[in-house]
Image (cartoon, rainbow over all chains, first blue to last red; front, side, top):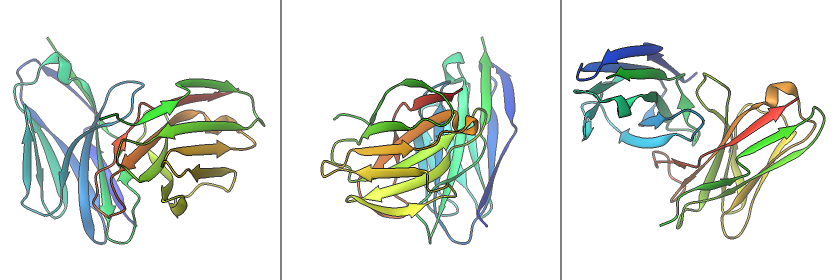
Amino acid sequence: EDQVTQSPEALRLQEGESSSLNCSYTVSGLRGLFWYRQDPGKGPEFLFTLYSAGEEKEKERLKATLTKKESFLHITAPKPEDSATYLCAVQDDSNYQLIWGAGTKLIIKP
Amino acid sequence: ETGVTQSPTHLIKTRGQQVTLRCSSQSGHNTVSWYQQALGQGPQFIFQYYREEENGRGNFPPRFSGLQFPNYSSELNVNALELDDSALYLCASSSHLEIGETQYFGPGTRLLVL
């Protein structure tokens, strides 16, 4: 059964303090790993799609990486506006549905 | 380009009632998926529609049903509402039916069942 686990559940950082969020997954055949950002009471906002181990993608202060068992979302010199819940989801090769983790709540203090 | 829109934004119902939620997909997108997100949890897949037909369903009972229209907009209907149905309901669209295709989400409808 496909499974996604995100850690930590919550992370508090000072502005400018870099860190990484983890997404561990178990899937029969990975077709895509997706990162989204979600602000309170709003829909998830797409960040990245990764398809194969070794792939990396960057956007502003965020960088996503993928191995065969996990993905990391690295945040460099974060700002308070980066505060949000970051969600990870996977899609396997037999199904169109996304399987989601519970998210990491990131709080950046000024 | 217009993004995914959902209506209403908030809704309060009582147990046993029925509700219809609406979603307009992003321009050029023909696939719509619906998700339920409880507070503090990741979204749970309800079902997906492609060209007006259900293309996959998650672990939800038959009282959750849907429709997709020729313009690719979609409805989610929930009958016999239960207290546990209180959640954020999310609609997502993608440009075509392909595994690995990115899904883009609307702002959601917050449903409260009393």
